[in-house]
Length: 325
Image (tube, rainbow, N blue to C red):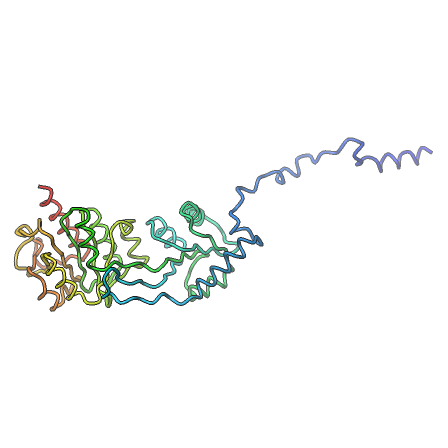
């Protein structure tokens, strides 16, 4: 009898009626939280994630937007969609407040501070987060090194050159526009946009062909200024400058052998277009012949040349200084 009672007590040791046995702290990790709940688009198997992934695949497979000709009034056409790959590149573009349609994130990504900050900025700005398989990211980026992070930017909406003058007059201000001739480095374009924003410029004009456009590199260099300064695209830069002359603007070209020095520019307080050429080649022949006057920037030594961003910044500062007097 004693043996039967002992066996019954052993069977009842773990029953609900008896006292429960503790773990001794072995399951303490099980009580640790897993952090905030990710958005529905990031939760594996969620209906919103499936819908978002399907929409992202349709958008990625869609053909690039066709560029409209730059000769129609009121519009300068669109660029094509652009994918920015890599954690540093994606984060820099997001920090520059560049527009974006989707942030693609590889499934099971090894997250770090850059990934978390990119996701945070995307959430704040309402940019959809798309979690997709890594092979799909490889296909989208054509094998580029993306580190599990890809940002899709929408086509840039270029203004028409005429729009820049209209906007200046609408503000009750004297127009000052920068035109770039044969400048192919997007970083220079971004730097010019940044200087235009700092010194009261009303826009930047670029040719449709053989010139830098509003790419991710231009957005990064502009440091957010591209959200405030419009960029217009001209089908033919020479004709656009001729149209500006007919509208009453003085076309001022920058050249190492310019007619006058910058401090002699009396037209600084008038409506003007500052035309900047590429470093080394300078202004093209037809563009230089279209200018009303050419101006040189005084430099020690006389042989040094400045890139487009620096040259435009110097002239814009001088114009802004004259107009403030």
